[in-house]
Length: 494
Image 1 (tube, rainbow, N blue to C red):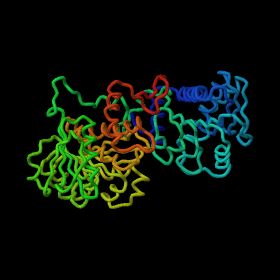
Image 2 (cartoon, rainbow, N blue to C red; image 1 turned 45 degrees about the horizontal axis):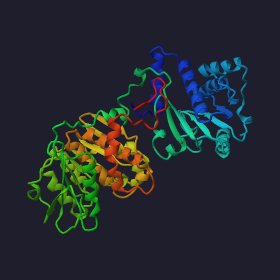
Image 3 (cartoon, rainbow, N blue to C red; image 1 turned 60 degrees about the vertical axis):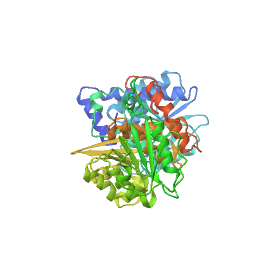
Image 4 (cartoon, helix red, strand yellow; image 1 turned 90 degrees about the vertical axis):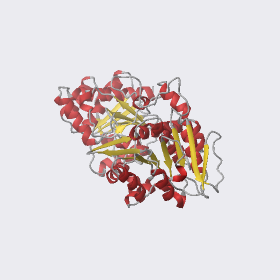
């Protein structure tokens, strides 16, 4: 499943028509889905349908007809100009005795639901004049708003603030990335009969789904033992940051590592999990780690000014490594590239800006572009750009892999959750997953654990403790994508 741009969705529509699928059927299916969403979520409420000039308006006209046929009390307001499929929907509405009024006449009524079918994904600039004023009236009406495809006006200001948004055929960037995501309210994905071939776009970012992530879970045979399911080395810690390597170790344990060894400066007193193996060091050197048995490592958590030495010591072991926190320095990442040692980097926007020589605000504003830039700068290194949502990228050869996580929530915005993630990804690499698979699955499980415990005040160690429960739910097929809705053909169920 892919994350679509407006242009990519227009191309999918055209491809569907080129395959012989009538565009009118797509509009009819979109209208039926919108009507169903309103009827299910706001049963018994009166509905005002606001329809624009284009295809989004045509979807609204089709929805108005289906709402009326289902017995809902409907008022329809529309732009005067219609053509093509939208005109056919206007004529079908009239055939059922429903006349549309000009949009200028709409005034909100108490208890009414507004169905926003003004604009879809095709806007190239912000709304002005009458349209901006109309959006302002919708937002001031204190009515529930259901938006078809996108709240009208996005990604610009002003825009409708929806209670629920029904994404058509595929999710778009605004459905996942803030600040636009906040305007969408609840997001549901509706299959509208688009042929699967029309939606095949391997060049677009992959959306991490329950079904795809469950397929990556490493198995555990009946004769497994602690040495056969993955051993992890966690390297970090400094006088001011004694908790970070502890949380990374806990993440590795809870993600299924058979054995976790923690290397740290000998003068520190770490409150490690009872199950961890302690490896205190007088100094960071390859020789000091030579006796450690591990299949993967995580380095940098809380290492402070010792991060450079710690990362170089771990690099000498040539283990697949997660570079996190203080180890996220350009010269260290380049060393892994130069030596050909598999690596995953897990920067937040500030750390990504340091790696790119830019500004954190620019990274946060354009995370997909920033992840691409990191993957281009550090080829064969898997990039995990943490955020809401997290973006993953990896350049192997000429191709570039992209993925966007679909789990996680703002309750995870607390100290130490990134350290837990480093341990999780390292544990999955130690279990035998390639770095790209380990990063995708690790990010997904980490976010899923946060979703299952997602209340403000969530602590990092509580997030780690939820990992086995999250993994078990994923294995049992109990996890549904946040946008999943009912079970109509083409709907997104993981």
